Amino acid sequence: MEQRIDRIKKQLHSQSYKLTPQREATVRVLLEHEDDHLSAEDVYMLVKEKYPEIGLATVYRTLELLTELKVVDKINFGDGVSRYDLRQEGADHFHHHLVCLECGAVDEIQEDLLGDVEKIVEKRWNFEIKDHRLTFHGICYRCRT
Amino acid sequence: MEQRIDRIKKQLHSQSYKLTPQREATVRVLLEHEDDHLSAEDVYMLVKEKYPEIGLATVYRTLELLTELKVVDKINFGDGVSRYDLRQEGADHFHHHLVCLECGAVDEIQEDLLGDVEKIVEKRWNFEIKDHRLTFHGICYRCRT
DNA sequence: TGTCAAATGATAATGATTATCATGACAATG
DNA sequence: CATTGTCATGATAATCATTATCATTTGACA
Ligand SMILES: [Mn+2]
Ligand SMILES: [Mn+2]
Ligand SMILES: [Zn+2]
Ligand SMILES: [Zn+2]
Picture (spheres, rainbow over the protein chains, first blue to last red):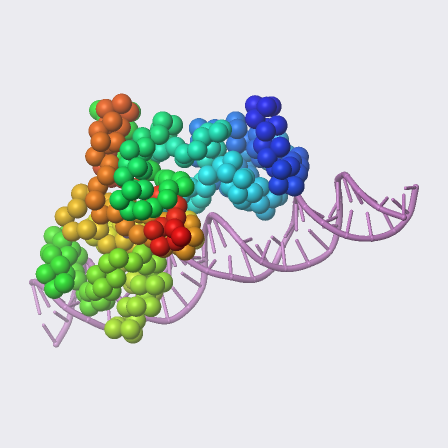
């Protein structure tokens, strides 16, 4: 945890950004909810518990900054809000998602299953892949009778 | 074109919806821009050319209805608007997308490349797949020097 | 022709995100 | 130590896509 924050701090410094108390509190919330998919509002509520003076605008700005640095990925599951997903440290691919149509759960697949597919796309479509987004919609293991 | 509209008409009737002139004009616009990814506003502007009295709310309602019927898929590329993508007739999978980070172009891959991956996901994660969304971000063939 | 539910269009309301702006923190400088 | 300048913050207003509301229209059917 502390080491992870330290590395994010260095990443910020390398672009001449500071790790302010507000930013640190926000990062801590994200780390403590690594498996969730929090909206800006969600993050705001959680950060307020440890830093009540923080403003909503600062949370938005911090999330935008972290997205720029690729610390988090900004995603959208079709409800009206953006969600912020901590990227696996050092991972060069964004993980996949399983969205359950029954219960709404969102599970993650950390393993990269797209290696072969990407080779095909690069060759056949002459497209240089930098990133990907893969989501499956269906019925999760819990909801299958 | 006419046959396609006829089949959509039947699909509507089978759920006791009517193909009103407004709905038909909207469907025609979608068919005429099959390869594009139009926002509700885009559709509205285009429909107005052939049906100037139409209201924006009706366009939204029609697009929602067509999404329900799976005639179109509602997608989101991260800019602040939903886009509506005509589904290949009879296709059971939603096509994939290539988004160029350089020029912003969005190309399509109609071929389904996820067959093997889906088998793995169904087995290993015990997840019953109903649909998928796959988007690659990178540099398109036009922008590669 | 009269009836009724569905559909429409104008417009207001909502709600997430972004912009603005005065204030505060803080490092560097003299 | 006082001054200056830059970056960051928080309150709040503005924006803008989407949804809700409601009076009116349409069209099928009795
Ligand atoms: Mn995730
Ligand atoms: Mn498409
Ligand atoms: Zn489930
Ligand atoms: Zn390009």
